[in-house]
Image (tube, rainbow, N blue to C red; front, side, top):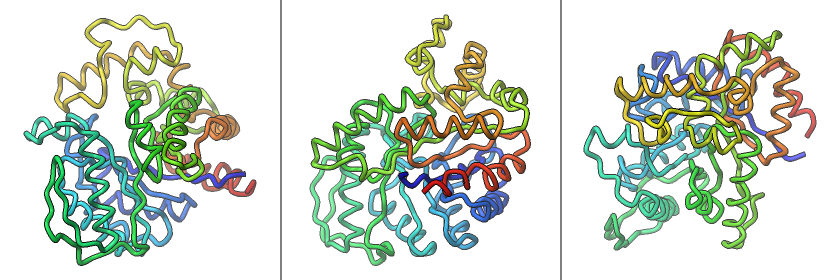
Amino acid sequence: MKEIKFGCFLPVPAAPVRKLIDIAKVNEEAGFDSIWIPDHVLFIPPGTVPEAWSTLAAISMKTEKALLGTCVSDPHRYHPAVLAQKVATVDQLSNGRVILGLGAGEAMNLEPFGIEWRKPVSKLIEAVSIMRRLWSGEIVNHEGTFWKLKDAFLQIRPVHGKIPIYFGANSSRTLTLTGKMADGWLSIPLSPALYEKRLEIIKKGAEKAGRTVEEIDTGIYLYTSVTEEAEEAYKQLDLIKSQVIPSPQLLLEAGYDVEIPEELQSLSYFKVLADATWVQKFLEFGNYIPREAAIDFSIAGTPDQCIEKIEEYIRAGVKHFLLINVGPNPKKVMEIYSKTIIPHFKDEK
């Protein structure tokens, strides 16, 4: 059986910054393989949103084994040399445990601040190329569409000479690109069927580049709610259905025949702004999501039901689960994963 990894997605924006460090440490001790944080300026729902790399630097000093990643950064808010230096610094602090999650960007982190969002995928490609060259120790001369570097180099390098880059990919173009050049894939919440469908696009992209999908750490972030009584777990999902399924298009693509008001049909998490109007729209959209759809797009129920659902995702191609613990008792959920669910999959290796 292929190696399956379980990650903890830190509760931003719900927890205070210092508490995030404690949560990361406790989850590592519980057996989670990786710790992830969103790289946002603003967030929905509202709350405390810390700067990602500063937080990971602090976490790196309190953990020993877990991989540390962003889900995800973007190429717009940082010059690639500056981002490369930040990431290499945290990699040194953590003794080589960093993963750089990168995506094409989200409106809430850019538009309110006047940050340019032009040709995001082309910019992503160019940024990755520059960072990989700088991490290798190369003196870089580059005349690109977005950046120009002359005799540029870094005076810090990653522990292993490179940093794994995982793409937060959702469109056909970025999925193909993931197959061609990324070390991993970070999917938004999807049903197993939709995950498998998108993974086929990644496989074709990999084949075009002379690679195989086995070279790519295929991940997904998912909400998880676990109790001995399934109904209690499902009630937790009822509270966050518009986060579990972040767009009407996904709901319809998954085969749920739901009438959604016209003003909500084009709703997309990647285009929303973190203001009261958009928050209200997302809450309203949640009212149209059937419970069975939320269950389909998550890992919820009794421990045995969750194991069955994880196995379904593994058959769809998932190797790395980034879990958002939504209770109803977060400590109990972590304990169930630590003592029952994670050992079930680690012992099968």
